[in-house]
Image (cartoon, rainbow, N blue to C red):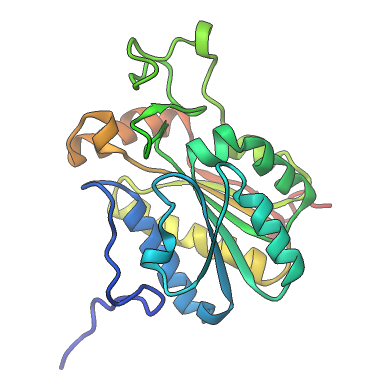
Length: 253
């Protein structure tokens, strides 16, 4: 008797291949999203919004409708599409440089308005596609192309806690921070993504999931070293968990 242990999600293109660096977290998260789209039978009703960054080529991987957006403006595009086509499942896929740095204004106001979309933000503490410049989430002391001596808070300020800030918005229905630094954390992340999907499917409100991920290339580490650094440095500063859950009585307008 054969047991099926692996099946490529239907909404991933059969001839599509991920183009990410070895050890990058994007491929893991994109696969989980694809699995959930299949599980919820959303392939024909999903519109994905790709951002400027390593996530820009969603149409190369997904057999879905995909729209592009200017740097940091994915929530604006998603808002327009969702309001025009309210029966569609609309999500943005962004990095910390896009969603939490150049576009954090859009992220916060989309949450404040309670737009019924889902934002998935990969936080690897740098602008990955453009060479590893510092972002709003770069840790104090972390070396990047634009902080070669390490981030100095007296000059560059402190890293922002995005999930905590978004959770303060009355229009946000579900806000969580997860990680993909281990098999166990990946399983937990998928369940958090499932809950974020359900918030939109049920029409409850805006959902935001921040996922801590490694960027071995720009961090100058091996994939194994990068995952270890993530767990020892990022997770303590950015605590994991659900920060707001509208289905459990957390404040919603």
